[in-house]
Amino acid sequence: MSAFDLPWLVADIGGTNARFGLVTSPGARPSHVAVLAGADHPSLSEAVDAYLAEHAGGARPGAACLAVAGPIDGDRYRLTNSPWSGSVHDLGVPFAALLNDFEALAVSLPHLEGADLVSLGGPDPVDGVKAVLGPGTGLGVGGLVPTEHGWTPVPGEGGHVTVPVVDRRELEIVRVLQSRGLRHVVAEHVLSGPGLVRLHRALAEVNGVTAPELTASDIVARLDDSLCAETVEVFCGMLGSFSGNVALTLGARGGVYLGGGVLPRIVDRVRASAFRARFTDNPDMAEYLRGISTALIVNPQPGLAGAAAWLARRAAAELVG
Image 1: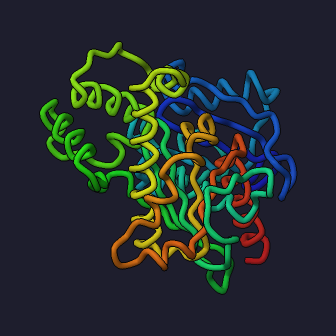
Image 2 (image 1 turned 45 degrees about the vertical axis):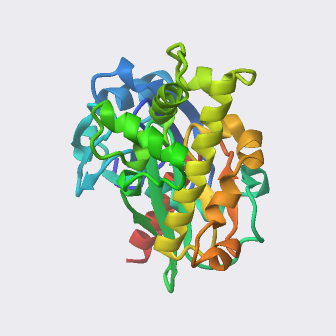
Image 3 (image 1 turned 180 degrees about the horizontal axis):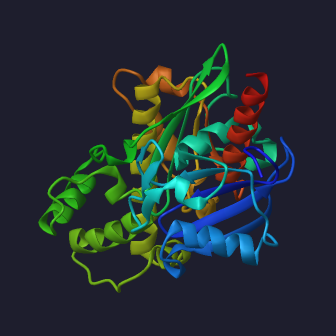
């Protein structure tokens, strides 16, 4: 088997779950999609072996593109919220490449259709730089830049910038988190699945109430619990400010797109929240931000679509070369 022989393996590797699929022809959407719990496998290589054996009929891919939630250094990866690390060459695939997970999500944007997106406010999208971000086990950020050779993804670690705070309640939350050992509170500490748990506990202390220990899933599910509702409200507001900061940093006139594992479970609550108002609430650039569209990605596997699109482009370039 040689490089770029079909099928191709695509993957979206997060801190909690590893999503896999096969591409059987260039331009096709991934098939044989399966989600494996990262904790069930000691390493990425073993997770790949398990997927190919148990969900892909023992397929031997000629190429692979893996989107990972963490920094990449050439062929090496280290997940931020998982012990998995190593080299992509360990997979034994003739051609294997790594992308940051939000780099892959950025690549997917031109391939998403109407039903894959839910508007969060603003005008219709226009051509130009796009930003993508989203809370899951961590908080990812990436960009997509139009060039004469097509769209170019821009990876980053923007989830680790200082947390956006605009009112007294949010300042009190940060002070509580600092008192609990987070000397420097970054955006990911509150705008993620684990961040929802931190917010809930901190708000309980700020409000002077006792609250049970809840998971992120519990918090978003308890619609009649006032503290849980307030937690989601604060989460959406801070996410709006953070998204506006990302839009300004990248000059994302082509739109801001939100993904990740948390938001698709609370679509209606995000739309009804202060997200969009906080997105545009800037003393100097409010008009600029009002001209930027915001949308939530509801496609269940956009990272796989992005990895597949990246492979198709790379394979086409190899043929031309």
